[in-house]
Image (cartoon, rainbow, N blue to C red; front, top):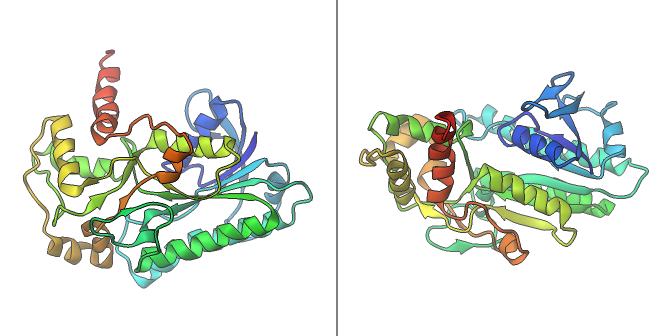
Length: 312
């Protein structure tokens, strides 16, 4: 396939582009950088410059594409949610997706597959209720963001494109995302759950996230929202217990909810509430998770890496 990727230099995107390249696909990244983008040895992909706001020569890449994968967006949890930060988070997703769909509308060739990111924040806080792709939208900033984001992506369906929406949970790997931040206090023997501890964590190993994207690319019957999470969500308390067990550290020092509120404001509510999300479509469609349980995922990331470094 000829595949165009936005957000291809990010935590998920760089690994995805390397995997697509290794599968023999021709990959072009739309990026603010210029020249070749090197993801890992032997995996160079083409890049075209854009600013994610304006039309330009980069649109020619869409004319020739079989698929577009849209992962662009400013980090959600890297800074306190001020009004300015919320606007940046929103514009970097909603306006960018709108720009891509408008560019697709000007194609002269047949429709493409359009895979666009979203988040499980769509469902809002769910207490103990299991949520599949048919669950209703929740409330709050993230739910409103995801609704607007997905609405722009779904406009590509009006053009005849096959649209897939990836409602992504916590993506786990050692070189980015939430896991390195969670590991730090555990390494100091000061790890533990964010209270109340009963909130659900819907997670996925990055390899399975990439696997789901590759599955969606090659499965023409797949469309609409897909929950990009592992089949076994866990509570925050269990997550931290498993993490501690895997790296042989205690999980005893809990973080009070009020501390998260003081430190992060509204963003803190994302840490103290959660969603129990199930990947119903992926499982029904035959996708086989490489890491279906948290323990196998963390062992692969943390123990497997140590063994490789030691030559084991």
